[in-house]
Image 1 (cartoon, one colour):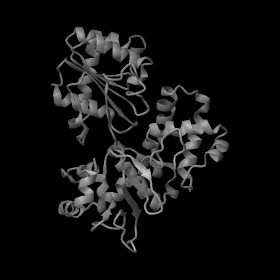
Image 2 (cartoon, one colour):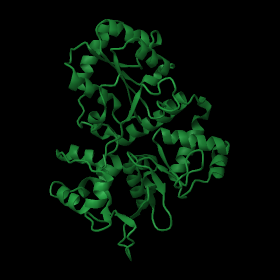
Image 3 (cartoon, one colour):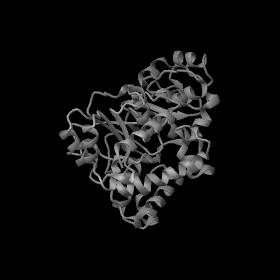
Image 4 (cartoon, one colour):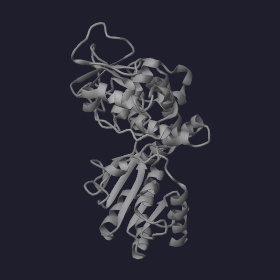
Length: 393
């Protein structure tokens, strides 16, 4: 297989795979770096992101840029560094590598490319389970890592309304939410789209003319079967235990995971259950919420689904309104903030700030608590409509 065949595939994909939403991450990356990793859960649009970069920076037939996917059987007989060398010798400057973790020695191969080809830039995608920083000494310090998330509520709104609504910081929302909300409401009715977003707005699958839930279930299975088992090198015989654990956690009504009971249910040890929960969290299937100051390997104070779409995919008849809204809030905040479990006065802490997720008017105001309301379109004082937190990215 020659480079020409790869260039033909590249040109076809760049021409036909046109992203309907331009992701803000495109402008947050320092494209001058030589080794750039785009991590993200399966299905959030990493392939489209790479092709969008190629479309914006190179003519479709410019052979200085090339997209390749490590799913190609060609790479069973050729390493990344060998292929990169051929591309580099042919005048290539930017190599876009999709699903780099399909190469068993991907870290060593990327390092070799970095050392051997000083004028070559590599942008690669990988699973959110991959490690690129502290515990990857081969690439630590040279690979710059970024996370591509699913659509925010703001991005979903922009897609459906044709608007260009901007994002806001948490400080913006807390200090100026009444003004911000008034400005947004002049342009769109967020509540008209909010429920649809909770059901199917996080993953780009809804843009395809296929069954969203089936596509999401397939992606979830791939996250476990490929991203977790392959990358963590777990034997296939343990697959059903991990799936059963995810189902137990997704359908549990308990606020705190009973690790001993879960270990009994899936017939494994407490330590293994904790490791599996961590892997599911790394794969962006779960969120682990800790007491302030705690972290893994301690038991989390609460385990929740990573986003609301997953709740509807696993057990749609059991979606509880309060849990749904807390899941939306956590997912929106997790992009740039650390969220800790609350105390008797609030649902969650973000730093020293207290947030209570509720659908009730507070009987008496506590100046230290922000009430995040999911029964209102606009707020006042320290009562903020929950949909506005979908504008954080």
